Length: 258
Ligand SMILES: [Cu+2]
View (cartoon, rainbow, N blue to C red):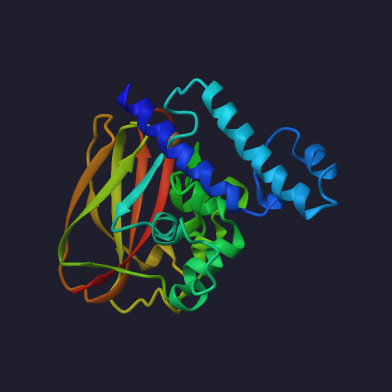
């Protein structure tokens, strides 16, 4: 019951942000085009449409039986994955033009596709069969091989992503909204000398620093990581093999080793 509440609560929060999104960006599976056509001609109608859509969304939400798995997934929340970090920092202020200077990588991500942030928990591929390097090409590691129709492509952008400070020993914290469990986690760190601010990420740039066993279904997982010899900017790359099906998450977190 707690899970259901948590999931729907978060989803509601995500939906409520959608009110501010220009209507053409709204992901609305049914009847979007039809509704838009008869309101497009007036700004007033547009505002009313936004209100109607958000009300409709709220009504629909109350009708959806929450299985806890259909819409809910998860991500690395500390050190924050790229999409989660951009959602966390800017989700309530995503149209602020100051973002372009203050957090340019998040800015380009929001410009590319806001749904990468609204769905910060959905960066996964199904059916990889463990052949991650075959399905996720070099240069596309942070989008999971341009998964989900390219929704997360902006995560592959090379540049000065905001970092989280970590020390040699740190903990990867993953939030699993749907309690999928884990067959295992793989945690990699980019080799010393690789600069994620200027170079596209390749598998050969990664060094495996942790490989875990199974984790029982829960909403929060901690993966202890012990490293040595890293300083400055790196990417922590976490591969989460979920247990409910062959579903794999590919998550880039930008860190600064102190
Ligand atoms: Cu899932």
